Image 1 (cartoon, rainbow, N blue to C red):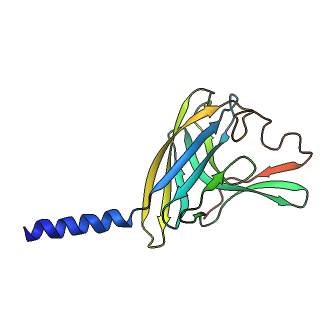
Image 2: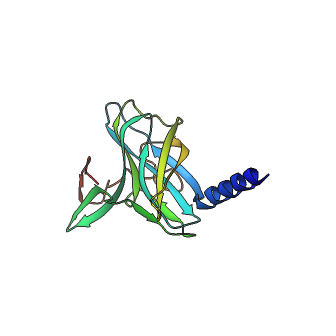
Image 3: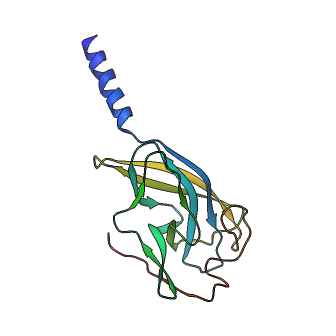
Amino acid sequence: MKRMLIALAALTVAAAAQAELKISDAWVRATVPQQQATGVFMNITADKDVKLVAGSSPVAGLVEIHEMVMDGNVMKMRAVPGGLDLPAGKAVELKPGGYHVMLINLKQQIKAGETVPVTLVVEGKDGKKESVEVKAPVRALNAMAGTGAGAPMGAGTGMGMQHQHGMKH
């Protein structure tokens, strides 16, 4: 009986240490043949302070957390060093033109109507990492957040865009 209580207590502590993530409106932008990268977008709310630090997907050789920033008149895309903060109880929007997950070195064309599995890794303040799998539907190449309609990221803005991959964290 004593062993069972100790095991139950350990299980309760382990469960309490895990962060719960609420993920909504996840989607992936479709690609054209031979395209090597695309974005994954969603809303994430964590019940504890954690960081989104990594990801993986069977459709990509590399998955990174990215942000879009203005550098003068040039919009640049870059990996987020150290991960993206997910404050407890606050929805964080990953969207075109902002923070997002990049699928890089694509192994195949990503077509509208498909579903792409993406595993996200979050890290707590205690350094413990947890994974959550997201199954994100693929939207048309010209899709924007919300309605699924609109122009491609950066199109019609009159601004140049630079995209940097493979940054070391």
